[in-house]
Length: 239
Image (tube, rainbow, N blue to C red; front, side, top):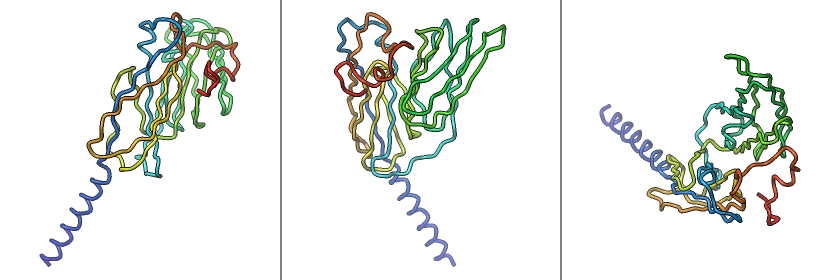
């Protein structure tokens, strides 16, 4: 009986150690934005957030997580934050804090979305929610205020991090092997990089390129632009 118990305990420990080693890999690094626009970069450009998403490259299983709600507030006819990355199925909640009406609509390669938000009165803040169930970039505008803009990127992975240009990212508890790293910023082209998850990995030093001129608001679009302009870079390539 004692031998049987010892055998079962040893087997359980061995299985635990194997499972831990299979999920002890990680991917880490830094991402910065290289501005090659026509003008000198300003402080607003340097403060642009960068999103980093990690997707399986060899069919690895990901850790499931529940639906999350991400909030975008409209203040002084501007959407804040103006760039958000979410997981497929997550919810975007818009809140109007202005004492004027807003009429939101979207441009994307997925289904169109639109809503009218009433005026904020006292503590009443009109809200609207959208389920982001189509991977890709969705651009939100206001038909009334042409400088009101937000971009929501939807990716099919729970491994998401948002950082400032030059900041560090780290994904741990991964299955070893090849993964795909997606980096994006509102003022830069989206970049995909093949990476390898391993124990004690090298620190990646990655760069996003921005072709935006930076004397104005980096990454701004207006409701008068065509959807073609939102997906095509100035040099003719896809964003």
